[in-house]
Image 1: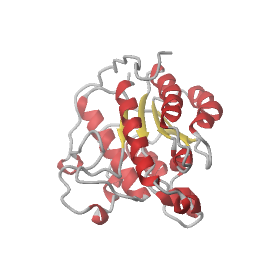
Image 2: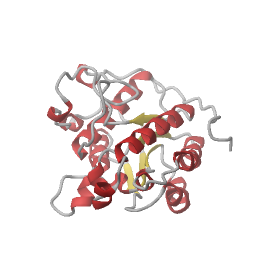
Image 3: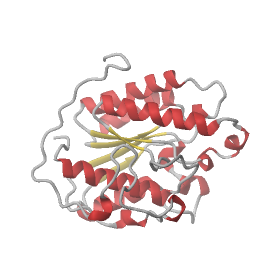
Image 4: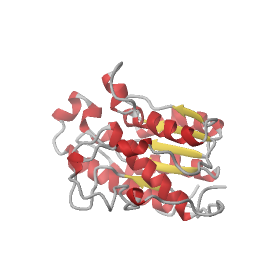
Length: 248
């Protein structure tokens, strides 16, 4: 395994012809936000993720991480909005009904625990599409060590990419996920922004791609819901498919 900052070189295989990319899915490939949506962030519903993709090459989709992997739907319990990852899986299944989907996310897991307790199972699942959400648990603490979190993310994303899977890293998208601890955490937004920046850089080094739904090009939002996260992930997948650089 190469050291943090040096990331391995991955060459995804081609995937036929590029799919048709609807205008409303055009996006900023770094933040995952739509460059054609002129509405303020608080007026974007995120419901466009229900549109099916023209093609879905992936057969096995896995999600690893902390409470951000489960989404607000799991935080609020029965009757709440459906978690973002479930929405993404449903959208993929609208085109590929046989898609296998597994969400290993656990509330309270640190990035180190995600690696130690989830990675082996994720690798055994033999996914060709993986999403990783980690580091939010640590960001609550004043002693947040972004270098340590980045090192753990490197140890998670690297092995997933080494299998040939496409990997999405998703930034923690709302203090509501962290419950009461977020209310007591001074400077939390700054730490979450730093985590998002470092995670995005790490994803780039590994040939993965990062979705940070709280960035909109004109500033920094403080919260988002499962609709918006799912929409941002689907837009990013559509753009990835259009590039023709899908993992073989």
